[in-house]
Length: 402
Ligand code: GLA
Image (tube, rainbow, N blue to C red; front, side, top):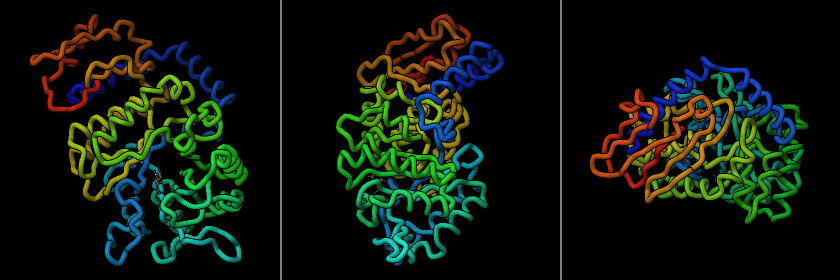
C-alpha cells in the first residue's frame, strides 16, 4: 500500500513545482513571518534551517568496540572514513546527507588527567578527532559527535559533560565538530533542565556554528517543548528506534498522540527528532522501508541514516535517495504533516504547506475493499495518478493528502 505514498509523493512534486511557479507575495510574507517568529523563539544559531540529514552508527553498529574480532563493524576511524567515502561515492551526499555523526562509544573511559579534556579511544581513533574531522571536511561533509549531559554516556563507556561544559564545548570546536548529539543519561531532572541550556550556551560561546541535538524531552516525564525548542536545534521525543516495523509505527503513534504539542514548536532551526532511519538494515521489508521514509518526510524529521552503506540493497538506496521524498522533508517552510484520521491501520496525514495553493485537494474518498481505488475529489486529472494498487499485505497504511 505504500505504493500510494510514492505515487502521492510524485504528485506532490507536481504540486511543489506549481507552488514554486506561483510563488506569491503571500508566500513570501509567510516566510518572513516565520523567520521573525523563529528569531523570537528559537535557538537561532542560524543552523538546521531544514531538518539535518546524515548518518549515525548507533542502531546498526551499537557499541561494538572489539575491533580485533569485528574489524569491519567496530566503532572506529575505519568505519567512519568508509562511511564518509560511501556517502560521496554512493550519491547520498548529493541528495543532502551531509552529517557524519559518531554516536556513543568513541571515548576513552576517563578524561586526560592533566587537561581534563575528553579523549577519543586511542586504539580505535588513532589519528584523533581533529584529523578525522579534517578528513570528513575534506570530502565536503560535516562532522558530528555524541556526548552526554550527565555523569556518563549511556553505554557507560565514557565521561559525560557534567562540570566540564565549557571545556568540552571548546574541545569540540577545536576538533572542528559541526553537530553535537547530547544524550541525557546519568543526569537528574534538574541536571537536564539546567544542563541542556547551559551546554547550548557553551557551544555558542565557542563561536563555531554547531548544530545542537538534544535528547532532553525523552528523559522527562512532562517535557516543556516551548523551553526545549528555545535551546536546541532538534530534540528526541520518543524511544530509541529499532530495526522493526513495530518500532517505526510506535514512534509514528507517539508523534501523532502529541502532534499538536510537537508541531507547535518545530520549524526552521528546531525540529522534532523521531530518531534514525533504520531502512537498509535487516528487518524492514521493502514496504516498511517506504513507510519509514515517507512518514519521516511527512513529519519534517531529521533524516539520519543508521546502516552499513556498503550493504544497503539497491532498491532501499533508491528510496533513501528519492529526491521527491527528500524534497518534502526538506521543504523550507518546515511545516510537519499531522494525522487527521485513523481507521484501523489506515492513517491519513495532512501536510499544510502543500495545501494552500490547492483548495479542494483535501478531499479524499475511498473504500478499503478488494478493488479499492482512492481518488481525489475535484481533481479529476489527478485521479489516475492517485489510484492505488490493491495491496493489503502491509500492516500499516499511510495515506497522505494535501
Ligand atoms: C541512547 C540514545 C541512542 C544512542 C545511545 C548510545 O539510548 O537514545 O540514540 O545514542 O544512547 O548509548
